[in-house]
Length: 250
Length: 263
Image (cartoon, rainbow over all chains, first blue to last red; front, side, top):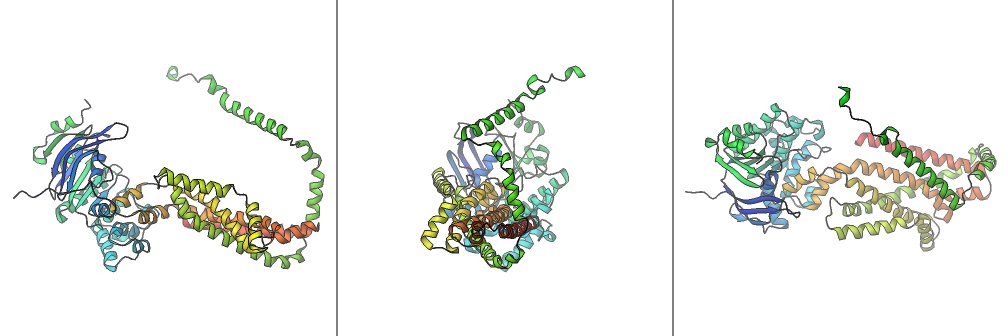
């Protein structure tokens, strides 16, 4: 039985207001539970592609379906509910640096509460426990009450992952999650993402510069160049020579 | 290797630009003092009267101090009340005026127009109006200070908001939070310490401003300042000024301490 893909792109185009082509005729499906790595040069459209999935960027034409639902009609509450099931990890971690780790992690849960409860930090005991568990999964439970800016870059990225786990996401989008990290913490962060993919069955889509990392972690690699998919192969069929094509400027 | 160092252009070599700007500014200064008829010479020739005043103020009448403690206390209360009310109203306006939070240019423009209008109204005019409405007393002073603080603080606040890191906002948006929650979780923690610092700065200004407002009958220490000046009782004036200085210094100390703690 062919399962329906969790995400599917159909003839997706994105043209910026100034006429620049962001994405050009994107067509591919992402099956549930896949660890997909998107590679390409800076400006190839990787970030744009990722952000169309949770509607942080709008597309110009075409259709994106998530769990077989077209997402372009979502507005207000339905859009927030869509975003709730899609976690996002950023290059710069995007933590509130002056807040505690606990508050940063619990912020991932706010979309499950009415506004007034979020504002008064009236989280249930179960969710506070869940915050501790999320931090345990990234091995940072002892930093619960530390301020976010006291942590190293790698630790901050792990807190960001814990925040995402609070959403109970079905999909995690990671936009260059390791671009500001050293090689050792890079491995820690990528290992955590891989584990969430394998243990929790979360579909993970990661943008990367590094071909070596892509080959080490991906189930499948998609290459973008100038907003177009120029490469799309399962990991078993990826060869170094093919991948180098993605990085050709011509 | 020396041959590879490029020649320094003569514009830079002779500092043409900084010297030119300085000359231009000095020229403008002289021209504007000519046109407005400011006589710098008079300042120096009449310096004697100024020192005479200082000498007469140099013997503060300390026995006057108990008399002014109550009005000074009232002045501080007026300043705190006025600043708090003004700042509380300033927060939502500052959020709506910040270009990185509100992308609707019309809404932002209208809010900023209101803020500009409020700042244009001189505080003395406001005091005169509110004394006419509420009668002589501290109510008029509090309302004046609240409006004055509102105008000033909201501008300072929205300029702070425009410098924040937008990353956490993006993260909260991706979590599925609504606007109000995003502001509460991602904006407020980033600006809180600067808000406190600007609040205390405004409080300090209001303590000084309320001494002037007393002239118009808006309550507080200003009433006594005016009385002592009218009676040429400069030793009393000196006590009032020194007491106000102490209050301002205390607020400044609290402000410095809080900024260190909150940073």
